[in-house]
Amino acid sequence: MELPGFTLGVFILLLHISSVANYPNGKVAKSCHGMIPEHGHSPQSHPVHHISVNQKTFGPGDQIKVTVSGPPFKGFLLEARDAEDLSGALIGSFTLIDSELSQILTCEDVQGSAVSHRNPSKKTDIEVYWNAPSSAPNHIQFLVTVVEKYKIYWVKIPGPVISQPNVLPFTTHEATPAPLSTLPPVSHLTKSFSASDCGNKKFCITSPLNCDPEKERACIFLSFTRDDQSVMVEMSGPSKGYLSFAFSHDQWMGDDDAYVCIRDGDTVHIQASHLTGRSHPVIDSGGSLEDMAWRLTDGVMQCSFRRNISLPGFENRVDLNTSYYIFIADGAADNGRIYKHTQQPLITYETHNVTDYPKNIGGSHSSLLLKIHGALMFMAWMTTVSIGVLIARFFKPVWSKAFFFGEAPWFQVHRMLMISTSALTCIAFVLPFIYRAGWSSNAGYHPYLGCIVMTLAVLQPLLAAFRPPIHDPRRQMFNWTHWSMGTAARIIAVAAMFLGMDLPGLNLPEPRKTYAMIGFVAWHVGIEMVLEIHAYRLTRKVEILDDTRIQILQSFTAAEAEGHAFKKAVLAIYVCGNVTFLIIFLSAINQL
Ligand code: HEM
Ligand code: HEM
Ligand SMILES: *[C@@H]1O[C@H](CO)[C@@H](O)[C@H](O)[C@H]1NC(C)=O
Ligand SMILES: *[C@@H]1O[C@H](CO)[C@@H](O)[C@H](O)[C@H]1NC(C)=O
Ligand SMILES: *[C@@H]1O[C@H](CO)[C@@H](O)[C@H](O)[C@H]1NC(C)=O
Image (cartoon, rainbow, N blue to C red; front, side):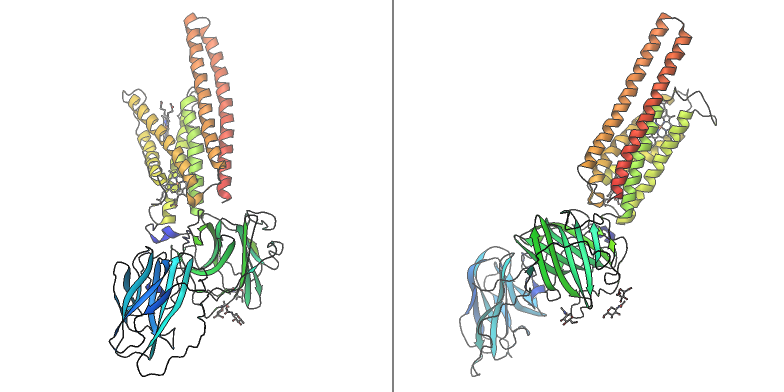
């Protein structure tokens, strides 16, 4: 998943959730303190697993057998703490009994201060020894977090309390263990969001621009409504799996403040998270968002929440009193777990201050560099090359007689169009390299085909510049080489264009683009065939005239003139069709 070069990550949000289940190897040291698997779901409230011990009192250096048991589970994290301060430091250390199933962790810099699973296999009980330290608090309580599967887990299930001898008995402060639910209640929205206040009360980002979530299901909508010290956020879009947006200082993914609404069956989870790099967002423990609400109807997912403009207590939440680039990404989710978006995220063209004047803006799913790359390549390999080759193939006799600047016009046109093709290719070629700051290793065969085309596009005019004179015996050789390399370049270029249009970096809308590309190829081949058949029939006619030797000169020129008029008409029609196809592609790129 990691591409070389730091800018390879530009615009790509990889949205996954890091979690205990995502650490099937049990290296969950990150969760040591809170004991919360960052799965982003509410923990279960009624524990079904329990901890038992083989003795109730302990002295320094004692080894106590601790057992975690219950219905089959995949992961766990076991710790011992001061029973009077359950969020305090970890006490003592553990020794494994079955190192196949469990492993010791170094939490809070103390080796062996916690135990976790070694692999995600199902287990029903785990036994370990706890070693009492030389100086321990009076009462120790064991705590365990158990993950049955990704969405189903219990946090900090309280276990038995063991005490030093001759101390006052431990009195529980909590009659029933309070589950550490981190997600505040959510309510259902009763009606759809609307774009009618966009630009006067709300700051809105919409895609397609100016769409209204009330009317169009496909509308991706994000709005911010400022209200004194807080901002109300509304997000709406087709409910494929998840919808998310992020505030970013740059157009690169990483170190961004992100918000995710995940569909999970018939409910929606709303979570604040942090994008550390081009990888899984880290779901925050919660508490920063208020007034959460959501709605799922007609295949549309809507979620809203309120957050304070400044959240000093939450290190990953940015202050909304400045300008940011805003990303919107969506994609699939499965059981509350989110996957990388299929399409490039939408990114605003510039930074915006969402708490300032309400505006109504759009964004782009693609970078300008890649757009120019695609556009120039289309111009070169659909239009200039096709017309230039048709001219060299069929218009030599038509435009050979009139000379200007000492060269036949067909040759001048061919040379001009082909040099343009090569020049456009060279310019367009460097752009994805600038954008990626390196090689596009995740772009399939497209870059390889592209490099072949680029090489041929440089060689072709170079070789042509050193072509042997017309009557040189090596001229035949040149003609053949020039024809084959040129034809190969065009065929490979068509393949490169087909693949290029499908790349996520510049994903033109399906299925129109495929039809348009097939249409273009059919149009080009059709016209070439018409001209080919026409040329063949013209030679036949001339041969017959030649054979019968009747008024050779007059009829020949008449037939030829008629043929030339036909060819010119076909060329004019061809150019119109070709330019129409080009415009279709350029406008599709423009709309990304
Ligand atoms: C025949 C014409 C084309 C040639 C010779 C060509 C060549 C290339 C090359 C060499 C790269 C890789 C650059 C790198 O590794 O950084 C590339 C990347 C790319 N090309 Fe093309 N290309 C052509 C047409 C197109 C078209 C028509 C499109 C889209 C409509 C397109 C879209 C892309 C995209 C999106 C990338 C970036 C892939 C990524 O890194 O995400 N290309 N192209
Ligand atoms: C990307 C660059 C180029 C491509 C793809 C290309 C392609 C072609 C093709 C396919 C033909 C054969 C047409 C046919 O008979 O079917 C041709 C003919 C020709 N090209 Fe190019 N060409 C390129 C650049 C140039 C340049 C820069 C020059 C001149 C400096 C040139 C000079 C010629 C000549 C003289 C012919 C006629 C050969 C003959 O007598 O059959 N070409 N070109
Ligand atoms: C937001 O601000 C209000 C008052 O300004 C405060 O009462 C509330 O606790 C803050 N919310 C959060 C999540 O910090
Ligand atoms: C934004 O708010 C923070 C915290 O209240 C403050 O430190 C900062 O100066 C503010 N920035 C602007 C541009 O108002
Ligand atoms: C953003 O807008 C708020 C509210 O109008 C304003 O206080 C703040 O200074 C603005 N920030 C910037 C960087 O312009």
